Amino acid sequence: FEAYGIGGASMVINVLSDNPNRANADVKYAVGKNHGKIAESGSVLFMYDRKGKIDVPNAVVDEEALLDAAIEADIDDFLLEEVEENSSAVLVEPSDAAKMFEVVKGMGYDEAKMSLTWITKAPVECNNEDFEANMVIIDKLEELDDVDSVEHNMSN
Image 1 (tube, rainbow, N blue to C red):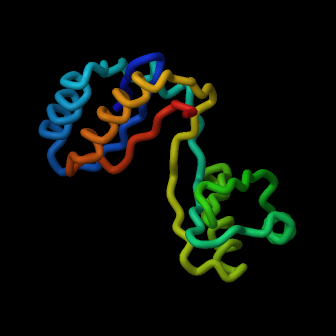
Image 2: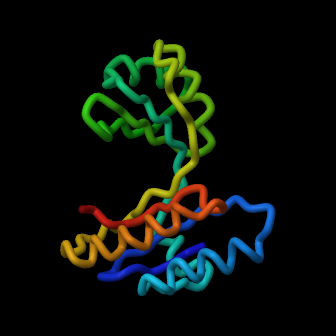
C-alpha cells in the first residue's frame, strides 16, 4: 500500500497476509482514521528506491575492511551508515544483497540480518506536530497483524 501522511509525508506499507480483504480494510481504516490518505498505486513509490539492507546490531562495521571485502565479492556500490549507537546498516542494490550478506557474515558479524526495504529519494522535514501525527499513523499500522513494515520519507 501507498499512503500520504500529514505535512507532505509519504509512506510505503508492506503487508503480508493470508486474507487480503481483511488487510485492505484494516490498512485503509488505520490510515483514514488518523487523518492520512491512501494513495493511488505508483503515486508514492516513484519517490523511493528498492534496496537490500543488512542490519548489523551491536557493532560498528569497519568501512575500509568492508570496502575491501565488497570489491573482492564483485560488489560495486554500497552505503554504510551508523543507524543507532553501536549499530550499523549496509545498503546495496537488491541483486547484491545476498552477496553482501555473506560478506558481512564472513567478517564475523554473525548477528547480521538481511531484508529488502524502500529508501526515500526525497526526505521531507515535518514540523513536530505533523511528525507526531504521522508517527501515530505508523504506530497504528505497525500494530496490525498483517503489516510487516512501514517505510516513510520523514527526515526528522
